[in-house]
Length: 346
Image (cartoon, rainbow, N blue to C red; front, side):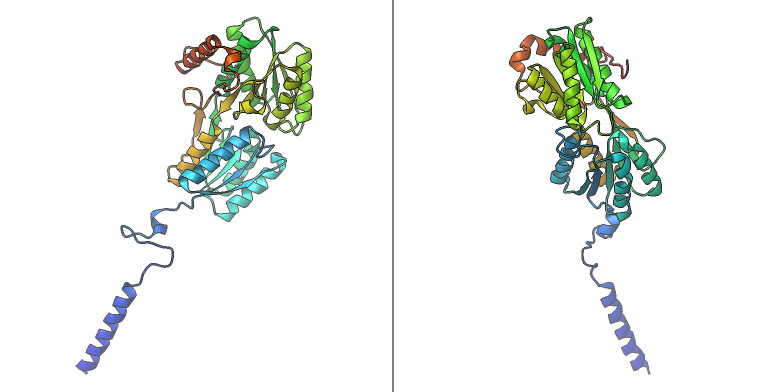
């Protein structure tokens, strides 16, 4: 009897050893006593819903895309995209579909027109992390907000416009009269009047349902400014700005780009572009999400934070002149040091 019990004990022990010696399931690795699934929840995947105009706008959306590409290259992420024709009607469905999949560390909504849709979806999916660019969402622990001090960068290009103006009149083409676009205009006017107090700054707005992607209307609006004597025109109108540039080229005056470096579209005609480093902000928020350091807070980027600025005047240095460029650099430093305070509205 003892012999039978002993045999069964040996067999049971061998079974226990085999069971305990099993390797982790395929795709798992043991490290410090944890499987990879235990040590990190990062999927290294991101989704983005672009603003009006989508990729190829040479402006805001393209800057976001560059941030995604940088994250893909440096962080090894994958990403999915959606380009709505009308964010007001399509954004909610796109955001919902991305959230329902459960595939993404972070879902990014590009542009202030996304706010209502994002809030609704973020409330429905409280465990999904979201970020919105150019708008503030308060009170939701799963949404990060990214804003820029557009007025500071616009002050710089307004000062340059004032330096280059010959007629006493410059122009501004905005997509609409929203709070965001008014920050661009406010800074532009303040900068121009900082260097030339008596200068006239004439604003026009595209409006309508397609304000950020209506090149024909933007071109026509620009022509009205030229008729009123404007000889430098700055736009804050997304893809519509391409129509602004067509007009300034035909009228042989200067234009100023926005968001991305647009100087090369019409070399020598576009004095500079007011850069919003949306690409850097996009990369940073992705990295935080992937690294498990995501925070649902407002982040604001101005000149001091290297969030806005100008191009390096690749095609226009000689036209602007060394003296004006030195003045512009001093103005930039004064804003950074707090000696010049740029208001967000006027």
